[in-house]
Amino acid sequence: MIDAAAVQAHSKRLEQALGGDAEGALKACEDFELEHCGEADPAAMLPFYRVHLICYLLQDDLVNARWLWERMPQSLKGDAELQAVWKVAQHLWKRELKDAYSLLTASRWTGPLTALSTRLLGELRSRQARLISVSHSTISVADCAQMMGMTVEEAAKECAG
Image (cartoon, rainbow, N blue to C red; front, side, top):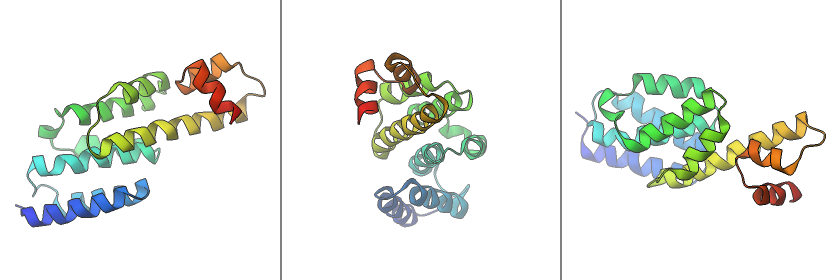
């Protein structure tokens, strides 16, 4: 069994990585999983799995997000926040962006997931905006708003600036 000091050291490393890009946080979570798979108390692993899963979504890596969910200890899958992140992943997999946007904005996130979910929402909207700009020469603000999961006013502001 992993000791509390090792978990604390990994937690500190993850906290530092969260200040930067998602890749650093993803690397910290992957390292933790590889070094302590099956050794750590599931409660100690939960924060890492939450961040790990949402970071895969930030990287637009749905395949690895799915495999992470598959190998995750069953005892952790009942966590409400982890389930919410997984539901977002499922919506993204099925290209149900409106549902993913709704879930990201409606869920009550805690800790690092608060900032990461906001970052994911922004990243998803940026990806969608790039796709819209490439695929449409003209588009109504209402259609753009629907595709980006925004109000018409938010979309008009986003498109203008």
